[in-house]
Amino acid sequence: MFRTQSSERPFCFVLPALGLMAAVALYPLASTFWLSLRHELPIFGISRFVGLAHYAELWHDQRFWNSLANTLYFTVVSVSLEVILGLGAALLLQQVFPARGLVRALVLVPWFIPTVVAARMWEWIYNPQLGVLNFLLVQSGLSAEGVNWLGHPTLALHAAILADVWKSAPFAALLILAGLQTIPPDLYRAARVDGAGPMQTFWHITLPLLVPVLGLTLLFRTLDALRVFDTVYVLTGGGPANTTETLSIYAYRLSFQTLQFGYGAAVAVVIFAVVLGVSLLALAALRRLGGIPQ
Amino acid sequence: MPSERDTPRNPQMTQVGTALLFALAVIIMLGFCLLPVAWQLLTALKPTAELVSLPPLFPSAPTLDHFRTVFAERPFARILLNSAVVSTCTTALGLAVGTPAAFALAKLHFPGQQVILLGTLAVSMFPQIAIVGALFLLIRLLHLRDTYWALILSDTTFALPLVIWVLTSFFRDVPNDLLRAARVDGCTAFQALTHVFLPVVAPGLVTAAVLTFVFSWNEFLFALTFTATASARTVPVEIALFPGLHEVPWGELAAATMVVTLPLLVPVGLLQRRIVAGLTAGAVKG
Image (cartoon, rainbow over all chains, first blue to last red; front, top):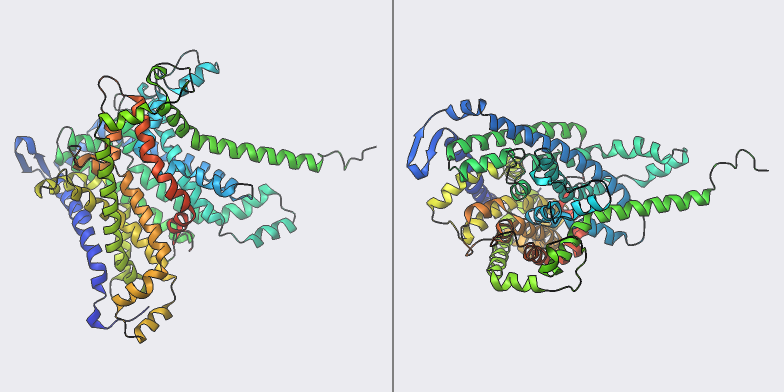
């Protein structure tokens, strides 16, 4: 650490960044809380204080509980798949083989493709008449006729999960690979000398040492999945019959389709609370596991 | 007569088997990652007549018609320009604001540093949806709707935590002696940053710039909410809405998605190692 003279005011270095975050993130957040306590319908000129009425309304709102359940299901399934596939991919990519650099770069392709573009690609693949997925299904004889992936009440959410896994598993692989590379090779050599097989090495050396990185990957992906918006918005818009409506989609529809800014803000506050709660729990757990430097 | 010890598999055969299994796994992994993109490329190259039924899987005569239509019959050039302007300005502003902050957090000493670092982390975990309604009302109040500024300011704010975290870890790796030497030579802290530190952390700046650019190029929720017309609409919104006369024009849509994806391939491919290092800095090192 370097001590500056007081005339230099090191605080000036951080002021622009703090100002921007205060104006564009903190102020709107405070404003969202305030908005959630008000009945705001701009098109009718309605604007009045209602206290906690919106939260009481949420408690009895079937659609809210449905969107919460969808969000949690989406998060648990997609994040587990992403971490498992990411771990598998990272173990493959760590090996020495020809053109490894190229393969590593290619695996990253889905990750930097815009989420909206990825969702459009999958929408086309899922297309009931012209989609390549149904074509393969029928050609291989697995199904007599095509499936309406995005129009089916239980399949639609899973179709969205698959699109999300495709897009995000590479990111998980990337983080886990970076974690694998920090494991000292000496440990593997020692294990081999002691006669440990590949499975034993994996369970007793690789996995325990990867726990902090796996925890971090899990946290990053969970926070992203809890606020999923783009993929669902493009693929189904929340349909059919709200079976893919997540919290973010519900909040968005309330604010920008039915223009109930106050009630939409209440749902937004719930999303914020869920994300904050998960982050704090995860950070506490990670700190204990040593995944985050103090 | 083979003894019992020899009956287990021939070690050479096992090695070949393992190699084959490994190759198969790599091929499946690559197929999963790349086939959807390849299918989109094939779709973009198919004549419209071949898009109304399956088979054919492959275009009989690949054509660039869809690419031509996208630019001729839609404001797509304008949309690309909007995205380029917004992403470039976001990157410039993000680095201009984030670099001094990261420098001060890593190398200078002042009260509240830990709080600021944690606050920054908190903003990075912010769900955008939680503030988009309130931010929309603010932007409408300031008459910034459907302007570049609405997007540049919101994108910059949400990219800042990443910029600050990546750069802070790069600045920390620079020895303190460098700062002391600059000080002896009579540099102020700001001069030390611009003259001594910036050249040293150049790789970090490149990483942060690419990450910010890609974030802004891909950002959807703000762009969807704060833009109304083609004058400020960005690529993701155009792709999501992609209006057609009756049905979604899949060929044109595929061409458009290829146009916005391919330019990212080169820089991200070239800088892949650096990006990974930047993303995992601090997170995995500890």
